[in-house]
Image (cartoon, rainbow, N blue to C red; front, top):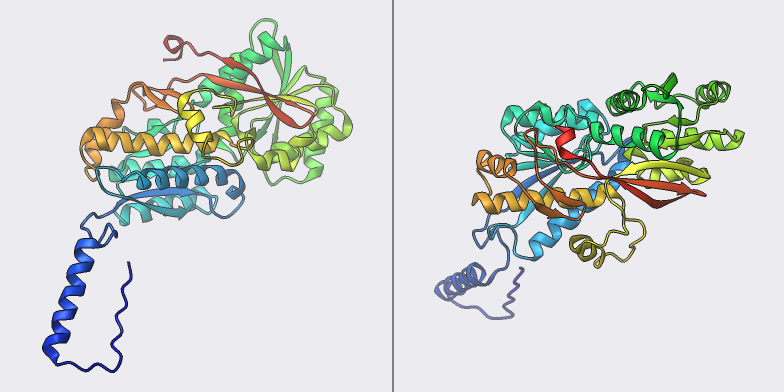
Length: 396
Protein backbone atom coordinates (compact mmCIF):
# COMPACT_ATOMS: atom_id res chain seq x y z
CA UNK A 1 0.00 0.00 0.00
CA UNK A 2 1.32 3.47 -0.81
CA UNK A 3 0.30 6.78 0.71
CA UNK A 4 1.32 10.19 -0.54
CA UNK A 5 0.61 13.39 1.38
CA UNK A 6 1.52 16.74 -0.17
CA UNK A 7 1.57 19.96 1.76
CA UNK A 8 1.30 22.95 -0.62
CA UNK A 9 2.32 26.29 0.81
CA UNK A 10 1.46 25.15 4.32
CA UNK A 11 4.07 25.62 6.95
CA UNK A 12 3.23 24.33 10.36
CA UNK A 13 5.31 23.94 13.41
CA UNK A 14 7.29 20.80 14.17
CA UNK A 15 4.64 19.48 16.57
CA UNK A 16 1.90 19.38 13.90
CA UNK A 17 4.20 17.57 11.44
CA UNK A 18 5.08 15.00 14.08
CA UNK A 19 1.41 14.35 14.89
CA UNK A 20 0.56 13.84 11.21
CA UNK A 21 3.45 11.41 10.79
CA UNK A 22 2.25 9.39 13.75
CA UNK A 23 -1.27 9.15 12.31
CA UNK A 24 0.12 7.96 8.96
CA UNK A 25 2.11 5.22 10.71
CA UNK A 26 -0.94 4.14 12.74
CA UNK A 27 -3.06 4.04 9.58
CA UNK A 28 -0.53 1.85 7.78
CA UNK A 29 -0.21 -0.54 10.69
CA UNK A 30 -3.94 -1.08 11.16
CA UNK A 31 -5.27 -0.90 7.62
CA UNK A 32 -2.46 -2.21 5.40
CA UNK A 33 -3.13 -5.47 3.50
CA UNK A 34 0.59 -6.22 3.29
CA UNK A 35 1.00 -9.53 5.21
CA UNK A 36 4.48 -8.64 6.41
CA UNK A 37 3.29 -5.30 7.86
CA UNK A 38 0.36 -7.09 9.43
CA UNK A 39 2.77 -9.41 11.23
CA UNK A 40 2.10 -12.45 9.04
CA UNK A 41 5.53 -13.52 7.86
CA UNK A 42 5.36 -15.56 4.63
CA UNK A 43 6.16 -19.27 4.50
CA UNK A 44 9.17 -19.78 2.25
CA UNK A 45 8.77 -22.72 -0.14
CA UNK A 46 11.51 -23.44 -2.67
CA UNK A 47 10.63 -24.51 -6.22
CA UNK A 48 13.74 -26.07 -7.75
CA UNK A 49 13.36 -26.62 -11.48
CA UNK A 50 15.17 -25.99 -14.76
CA UNK A 51 14.42 -22.39 -15.70
CA UNK A 52 17.31 -22.39 -18.18
CA UNK A 53 19.21 -25.02 -20.15
CA UNK A 54 18.29 -28.22 -21.98
CA UNK A 55 15.55 -29.25 -19.52
CA UNK A 56 13.79 -25.86 -19.41
CA UNK A 57 11.14 -26.81 -21.96
CA UNK A 58 10.09 -30.01 -20.22
CA UNK A 59 10.16 -28.24 -16.82
CA UNK A 60 7.88 -25.39 -17.92
CA UNK A 61 4.57 -27.19 -17.11
CA UNK A 62 5.82 -28.02 -13.60
CA UNK A 63 6.73 -24.39 -12.94
CA UNK A 64 3.35 -23.27 -14.25
CA UNK A 65 1.52 -25.66 -11.94
CA UNK A 66 3.47 -24.66 -8.84
CA UNK A 67 2.82 -20.98 -9.48
CA UNK A 68 -0.90 -21.60 -10.06
CA UNK A 69 -1.26 -23.62 -6.85
CA UNK A 70 0.58 -21.06 -4.70
CA UNK A 71 -1.37 -18.18 -6.22
CA UNK A 72 -4.70 -19.85 -5.40
CA UNK A 73 -3.68 -20.76 -1.85
CA UNK A 74 -2.65 -17.16 -1.19
CA UNK A 75 -5.88 -15.84 -2.70
CA UNK A 76 -7.77 -18.04 -0.26
CA UNK A 77 -5.90 -16.69 2.75
CA UNK A 78 -2.70 -18.72 2.73
CA UNK A 79 -1.78 -21.60 5.04
CA UNK A 80 -2.52 -21.20 8.74
CA UNK A 81 -3.27 -17.53 7.94
CA UNK A 82 0.19 -17.01 6.44
CA UNK A 83 0.94 -16.45 2.75
CA UNK A 84 3.34 -18.68 0.82
CA UNK A 85 6.42 -17.02 -0.62
CA UNK A 86 7.57 -19.08 -3.61
CA UNK A 87 11.36 -19.05 -3.86
CA UNK A 88 12.16 -20.11 -7.42
CA UNK A 89 15.69 -21.49 -7.86
CA UNK A 90 17.15 -22.48 -11.23
CA UNK A 91 19.03 -25.80 -11.26
CA UNK A 92 20.41 -24.91 -14.72
CA UNK A 93 19.41 -28.31 -16.11
CA UNK A 94 22.17 -30.26 -14.35
CA UNK A 95 22.68 -32.44 -11.26
CA UNK A 96 25.48 -30.14 -10.09
CA UNK A 97 23.26 -27.09 -10.51
CA UNK A 98 20.54 -28.95 -8.61
CA UNK A 99 22.83 -29.56 -5.65
CA UNK A 100 23.84 -25.89 -5.63
CA UNK A 101 20.15 -24.88 -5.79
CA UNK A 102 19.35 -27.14 -2.83
CA UNK A 103 22.19 -25.65 -0.80
CA UNK A 104 20.82 -22.19 -1.56
CA UNK A 105 17.34 -23.24 -0.46
CA UNK A 106 18.74 -24.54 2.82
CA UNK A 107 20.68 -21.31 3.36
CA UNK A 108 17.50 -19.28 2.81
CA UNK A 109 15.74 -21.29 5.49
CA UNK A 110 12.87 -22.63 3.39
CA UNK A 111 10.24 -24.76 5.05
CA UNK A 112 10.03 -27.26 2.19
CA UNK A 113 11.10 -27.95 -1.39
CA UNK A 114 8.94 -28.72 -4.42
CA UNK A 115 10.84 -30.34 -7.32
CA UNK A 116 12.56 -31.42 -9.38
CA UNK A 117 11.40 -32.60 -12.80
CA UNK A 118 14.22 -34.85 -14.04
CA UNK A 119 15.17 -37.71 -11.75
CA UNK A 120 18.90 -36.97 -11.95
CA UNK A 121 18.15 -33.46 -10.65
CA UNK A 122 15.91 -34.70 -7.85
CA UNK A 123 18.49 -37.24 -6.74
CA UNK A 124 20.99 -34.40 -6.22
CA UNK A 125 18.50 -32.19 -4.35
CA UNK A 126 17.21 -35.05 -2.21
CA UNK A 127 20.63 -35.68 -0.68
CA UNK A 128 20.84 -32.08 0.54
CA UNK A 129 17.20 -31.97 1.66
CA UNK A 130 17.60 -35.14 3.70
CA UNK A 131 20.83 -33.92 5.28
CA UNK A 132 19.25 -30.59 6.24
CA UNK A 133 15.93 -32.07 7.34
CA UNK A 134 13.86 -30.24 4.71
CA UNK A 135 10.68 -31.97 3.48
CA UNK A 136 10.83 -32.40 -0.30
CA UNK A 137 8.05 -33.41 -2.69
CA UNK A 138 8.86 -34.18 -6.31
CA UNK A 139 6.02 -33.87 -8.75
CA UNK A 140 7.32 -36.07 -11.58
CA UNK A 141 10.72 -37.64 -10.79
CA UNK A 142 10.09 -41.38 -11.12
CA UNK A 143 13.50 -42.95 -10.38
CA UNK A 144 13.04 -45.41 -7.47
CA UNK A 145 16.11 -44.11 -5.61
CA UNK A 146 14.74 -40.56 -5.22
CA UNK A 147 12.56 -41.32 -2.19
CA UNK A 148 14.92 -43.99 -0.88
CA UNK A 149 17.35 -41.17 -0.13
CA UNK A 150 15.61 -40.74 3.21
CA UNK A 151 12.42 -40.15 5.16
CA UNK A 152 12.13 -36.45 4.28
CA UNK A 153 11.68 -37.19 0.55
CA UNK A 154 8.28 -37.77 -1.08
CA UNK A 155 6.70 -37.74 -4.53
CA UNK A 156 3.18 -37.56 -5.98
CA UNK A 157 3.92 -39.53 -9.18
CA UNK A 158 4.23 -43.28 -9.70
CA UNK A 159 7.73 -44.76 -9.90
CA UNK A 160 9.68 -46.29 -12.77
CA UNK A 161 9.04 -49.71 -11.23
CA UNK A 162 5.34 -49.17 -11.84
CA UNK A 163 5.54 -47.63 -15.31
CA UNK A 164 8.15 -50.18 -16.42
CA UNK A 165 5.76 -52.96 -15.50
CA UNK A 166 2.81 -51.17 -17.08
CA UNK A 167 4.49 -50.65 -20.46
CA UNK A 168 5.91 -54.20 -20.54
CA UNK A 169 2.48 -55.61 -19.74
CA UNK A 170 0.89 -53.39 -22.39
CA UNK A 171 3.42 -54.49 -25.02
CA UNK A 172 3.04 -58.21 -24.33
CA UNK A 173 -0.63 -58.51 -23.41
CA UNK A 174 -2.32 -55.76 -25.42
CA UNK A 175 -0.06 -55.37 -28.46
CA UNK A 176 0.90 -59.07 -28.40
CA UNK A 177 4.53 -58.13 -28.96
CA UNK A 178 7.04 -60.96 -28.75
CA UNK A 179 10.26 -59.11 -29.54
CA UNK A 180 11.58 -55.71 -28.62
CA UNK A 181 14.55 -53.35 -28.88
CA UNK A 182 15.65 -50.84 -26.25
CA UNK A 183 17.10 -47.42 -27.08
CA UNK A 184 18.79 -46.03 -23.97
CA UNK A 185 20.28 -42.63 -23.13
CA UNK A 186 23.49 -43.32 -21.19
CA UNK A 187 23.36 -39.82 -19.66
CA UNK A 188 19.96 -40.42 -18.07
CA UNK A 189 19.41 -42.23 -14.76
CA UNK A 190 15.75 -42.24 -15.69
CA UNK A 191 16.28 -43.86 -19.10
CA UNK A 192 18.75 -46.49 -17.89
CA UNK A 193 16.56 -47.57 -14.97
CA UNK A 194 13.28 -47.56 -16.88
CA UNK A 195 14.70 -49.56 -19.78
CA UNK A 196 15.97 -52.26 -17.41
CA UNK A 197 12.63 -52.41 -15.61
CA UNK A 198 10.87 -52.78 -18.95
CA UNK A 199 13.24 -55.62 -19.86
CA UNK A 200 12.73 -57.31 -16.49
CA UNK A 201 8.96 -57.31 -16.87
CA UNK A 202 8.85 -58.05 -20.60
CA UNK A 203 11.29 -60.94 -20.94
CA UNK A 204 9.80 -64.34 -20.18
CA UNK A 205 9.21 -67.50 -22.20
CA UNK A 206 7.88 -66.27 -25.53
CA UNK A 207 9.07 -62.63 -25.24
CA UNK A 208 12.61 -61.31 -25.48
CA UNK A 209 14.64 -58.14 -25.98
CA UNK A 210 16.75 -58.46 -29.13
CA UNK A 211 19.18 -55.60 -28.48
CA UNK A 212 20.00 -52.63 -26.26
CA UNK A 213 21.09 -49.70 -28.42
CA UNK A 214 22.86 -46.90 -26.57
CA UNK A 215 23.12 -43.17 -27.21
CA UNK A 216 23.62 -39.87 -25.41
CA UNK A 217 21.01 -37.12 -25.51
CA UNK A 218 23.43 -34.87 -27.38
CA UNK A 219 24.24 -37.50 -30.00
CA UNK A 220 24.12 -36.32 -33.61
CA UNK A 221 21.65 -37.46 -36.24
CA UNK A 222 24.18 -39.85 -37.74
CA UNK A 223 24.22 -41.88 -34.53
CA UNK A 224 20.43 -41.89 -34.27
CA UNK A 225 20.14 -43.06 -37.89
CA UNK A 226 22.64 -45.83 -37.22
CA UNK A 227 20.47 -47.09 -34.34
CA UNK A 228 17.42 -47.00 -36.58
CA UNK A 229 19.24 -49.01 -39.27
CA UNK A 230 20.14 -51.62 -36.65
CA UNK A 231 16.52 -51.74 -35.54
CA UNK A 232 15.30 -52.23 -39.10
CA UNK A 233 17.57 -55.27 -39.46
CA UNK A 234 16.36 -56.75 -36.18
CA UNK A 235 12.70 -56.11 -37.11
CA UNK A 236 11.25 -56.12 -33.55
CA UNK A 237 7.56 -55.86 -32.75
CA UNK A 238 8.18 -52.87 -30.46
CA UNK A 239 10.99 -50.42 -29.73
CA UNK A 240 11.07 -48.90 -26.25
CA UNK A 241 12.62 -45.39 -26.03
CA UNK A 242 12.40 -44.05 -22.44
CA UNK A 243 13.74 -40.57 -23.13
CA UNK A 244 12.62 -36.97 -23.35
CA UNK A 245 12.97 -34.45 -26.19
CA UNK A 246 15.58 -36.56 -27.98
CA UNK A 247 13.01 -39.37 -28.24
CA UNK A 248 10.99 -37.08 -30.49
CA UNK A 249 14.02 -36.54 -32.73
CA UNK A 250 14.57 -40.31 -33.00
CA UNK A 251 10.92 -40.85 -33.86
CA UNK A 252 11.08 -38.13 -36.51
CA UNK A 253 13.96 -39.99 -38.17
CA UNK A 254 12.05 -43.27 -37.86
CA UNK A 255 9.08 -41.72 -39.64
CA UNK A 256 11.30 -40.74 -42.56
CA UNK A 257 12.32 -44.35 -43.23
CA UNK A 258 8.95 -45.89 -42.42
CA UNK A 259 10.18 -48.24 -39.67
CA UNK A 260 7.72 -51.12 -39.36
CA UNK A 261 7.66 -51.41 -35.57
CA UNK A 262 5.57 -49.85 -32.80
CA UNK A 263 7.41 -47.21 -30.69
CA UNK A 264 6.78 -47.13 -26.94
CA UNK A 265 7.82 -44.56 -24.36
CA UNK A 266 7.57 -43.60 -20.72
CA UNK A 267 6.17 -40.49 -19.08
CA UNK A 268 9.07 -38.48 -20.54
CA UNK A 269 7.06 -38.30 -23.77
CA UNK A 270 4.25 -36.38 -22.11
CA UNK A 271 5.56 -32.89 -22.87
CA UNK A 272 5.01 -30.36 -25.62
CA UNK A 273 8.74 -30.28 -26.43
CA UNK A 274 8.65 -33.99 -27.28
CA UNK A 275 5.93 -33.45 -29.86
CA UNK A 276 7.65 -30.36 -31.26
CA UNK A 277 10.90 -32.31 -31.68
CA UNK A 278 9.30 -35.05 -33.76
CA UNK A 279 6.57 -36.83 -31.83
CA UNK A 280 4.02 -34.99 -33.96
CA UNK A 281 5.28 -36.94 -37.01
CA UNK A 282 4.55 -40.34 -35.47
CA UNK A 283 1.61 -42.16 -37.06
CA UNK A 284 1.17 -44.60 -34.17
CA UNK A 285 2.84 -45.10 -30.82
CA UNK A 286 2.11 -45.45 -27.12
CA UNK A 287 3.43 -43.97 -23.89
CA UNK A 288 2.37 -43.87 -20.27
CA UNK A 289 1.55 -40.85 -18.17
CA UNK A 290 0.09 -39.85 -14.81
CA UNK A 291 -3.11 -38.12 -15.81
CA UNK A 292 -5.30 -37.31 -18.78
CA UNK A 293 -7.26 -34.11 -19.35
CA UNK A 294 -10.39 -36.19 -19.97
CA UNK A 295 -10.51 -36.99 -16.24
CA UNK A 296 -13.89 -36.27 -14.68
CA UNK A 297 -12.84 -36.22 -11.02
CA UNK A 298 -13.99 -33.22 -9.00
CA UNK A 299 -10.45 -31.85 -8.37
CA UNK A 300 -9.61 -32.18 -12.07
CA UNK A 301 -12.78 -30.47 -13.25
CA UNK A 302 -12.32 -27.69 -10.70
CA UNK A 303 -8.75 -27.02 -11.85
CA UNK A 304 -9.64 -27.12 -15.54
CA UNK A 305 -12.51 -24.69 -14.97
CA UNK A 306 -9.92 -21.97 -14.35
CA UNK A 307 -7.86 -22.79 -17.42
CA UNK A 308 -8.56 -20.97 -20.68
CA UNK A 309 -6.68 -23.61 -22.66
CA UNK A 310 -8.03 -26.97 -21.49
CA UNK A 311 -6.50 -29.05 -24.27
CA UNK A 312 -2.80 -28.60 -23.48
CA UNK A 313 -2.60 -29.40 -19.78
CA UNK A 314 0.33 -31.77 -19.30
CA UNK A 315 0.61 -34.24 -16.43
CA UNK A 316 3.64 -32.48 -14.93
CA UNK A 317 1.56 -29.34 -14.39
CA UNK A 318 -1.24 -30.96 -12.43
CA UNK A 319 1.20 -33.15 -10.52
CA UNK A 320 2.94 -30.01 -9.28
CA UNK A 321 -0.42 -28.59 -8.19
CA UNK A 322 -1.02 -31.79 -6.23
CA UNK A 323 2.45 -31.52 -4.67
CA UNK A 324 1.86 -27.97 -3.42
CA UNK A 325 -1.65 -28.72 -2.15
CA UNK A 326 -0.45 -31.84 -0.39
CA UNK A 327 2.28 -29.85 1.34
CA UNK A 328 -0.28 -27.23 2.42
CA UNK A 329 -2.52 -29.94 3.85
CA UNK A 330 0.41 -31.43 5.78
CA UNK A 331 1.14 -28.04 7.33
CA UNK A 332 -2.47 -27.57 8.34
CA UNK A 333 -2.75 -31.05 9.84
CA UNK A 334 0.54 -30.68 11.71
CA UNK A 335 -0.51 -27.24 12.96
CA UNK A 336 2.80 -25.68 11.95
CA UNK A 337 4.28 -23.98 8.91
CA UNK A 338 7.84 -23.88 10.24
CA UNK A 339 8.55 -27.13 12.10
CA UNK A 340 10.01 -29.28 9.34
CA UNK A 341 10.02 -32.48 11.39
CA UNK A 342 6.32 -32.13 12.21
CA UNK A 343 5.48 -31.44 8.57
CA UNK A 344 7.50 -34.48 7.51
CA UNK A 345 5.61 -36.62 10.01
CA UNK A 346 2.30 -35.32 8.70
CA UNK A 347 3.34 -36.11 5.12
CA UNK A 348 4.31 -39.65 6.06
CA UNK A 349 0.79 -40.18 7.40
CA UNK A 350 -1.02 -38.98 4.25
CA UNK A 351 -3.86 -41.33 3.33
CA UNK A 352 -6.64 -40.77 0.81
CA UNK A 353 -5.61 -37.29 -0.34
CA UNK A 354 -7.86 -36.37 -3.28
CA UNK A 355 -5.63 -34.79 -5.89
CA UNK A 356 -6.15 -33.81 -9.50
CA UNK A 357 -4.16 -36.86 -10.60
CA UNK A 358 -5.94 -39.29 -8.31
CA UNK A 359 -6.02 -40.50 -4.72
CA UNK A 360 -2.67 -40.32 -2.92
CA UNK A 361 -1.65 -42.48 0.03
CA UNK A 362 2.05 -42.80 0.79
CA UNK A 363 3.78 -46.11 1.40
CA UNK A 364 6.77 -46.50 3.74
CA UNK A 365 9.11 -45.03 1.09
CA UNK A 366 7.06 -41.87 0.50
CA UNK A 367 5.74 -43.19 -2.83
CA UNK A 368 2.08 -43.20 -3.86
CA UNK A 369 0.54 -46.33 -5.34
CA UNK A 370 -1.25 -45.03 -8.41
CA UNK A 371 -2.71 -46.27 -11.68
CA UNK A 372 -0.92 -45.65 -14.97
CA UNK A 373 -2.61 -43.94 -17.92
CA UNK A 374 -1.68 -45.31 -21.35
CA UNK A 375 -1.82 -42.77 -24.17
CA UNK A 376 -1.96 -43.58 -27.88
CA UNK A 377 -0.35 -41.28 -30.42
CA UNK A 378 -2.35 -41.22 -33.63
CA UNK A 379 -1.15 -39.07 -36.50
CA UNK A 380 1.02 -37.06 -34.15
CA UNK A 381 -1.57 -36.35 -31.44
CA UNK A 382 -2.05 -38.04 -28.05
CA UNK A 383 -5.34 -39.69 -27.07
CA UNK A 384 -6.39 -41.61 -23.99
CA UNK A 385 -6.15 -45.34 -24.65
CA UNK A 386 -6.51 -47.27 -21.40
CA UNK A 387 -5.57 -47.47 -17.75
CA UNK A 388 -3.18 -49.92 -16.11
CA UNK A 389 -4.63 -50.74 -12.72
CA UNK A 390 -1.88 -51.53 -10.23
CA UNK A 391 -2.41 -54.09 -7.53
CA UNK A 392 -0.84 -52.43 -4.47
CA UNK A 393 -0.25 -55.80 -2.77
CA UNK A 394 1.84 -56.92 -5.72
CA UNK A 395 3.92 -53.74 -5.82
CA UNK A 396 5.33 -53.63 -2.31
